[in-house]
Image (cartoon, rainbow, N blue to C red; front, side):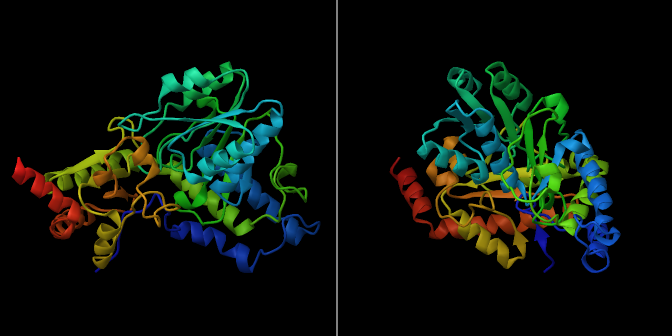
Length: 393
């Protein structure tokens, strides 16, 4: 059976054009970009060209983009810089549904003496603006809220959240790892101070990301040592990965329309087909403000891990949530924050489609999954309990 890959929010395959652009920098142009000689120093031009491409994808100036090892480093760099920018402020705000790359840092900071507010969401995963406004104060140093949720695809009103942070005198950072390359992201229009993004989510290589730092904002580097990245991130430049990220960013911008014209249609067809064929299931997330490729569906009275294992037998790849937490047997913290009942949250599957997926693949999943759910429910103690309750009524 050919592979059906519906786990693009976890990672994406490197495009052939991206790999081709990277290849010479492994074997032919392998010099250190910080070297004085032309063989190595000449690679600086390739880095700056890639920087301009990444900047163009988010409507930034090239000088505002700093390359990192990925989204996680970009998140930590932004957070810790903001705390040094406002050393006397001890209040920070994030959402309860952040990726662990942000959530765990805030939990750690809470143990170190910072006052932390985790803003909740409603049943559709929408950011609680009333709660947010109530906790903002003059002691707030940083607000860090994701652009779009990695598990449900729900898109947050970043421009409005950012404006309120600025009114309170706080810096604003957004983890836009899942949004960049799938929807239009404009840092100038949104007004954000810092933004994190990652190459491997847009068909580029792993191990390379970027942090946007608004021009004029004083930045305190997380990685110190050499003079690389204009003293904003020390360490020998990963030239092949940077070049690959740049090429992936260029292609992502040119093909962004495909997410609306093609991927959203495939996603909706998948959801509608599964809901029609499988009883006791629900779609999680804001139906009107959601990434066009993401579908999080809870199948009641079964375990998500069992569903994934049986899908894998058909060579179908999906996820039970964020790739960084999908190994856990606990229900998703995102779905728990949304108030999804335990018997449904435990059976949630995230399907995240890409531009290369097809209607034939969607039809195959709709064909394969209903019998899997039926089989699992027949042996599920949760579903047996439901049947018994129904019989007593």
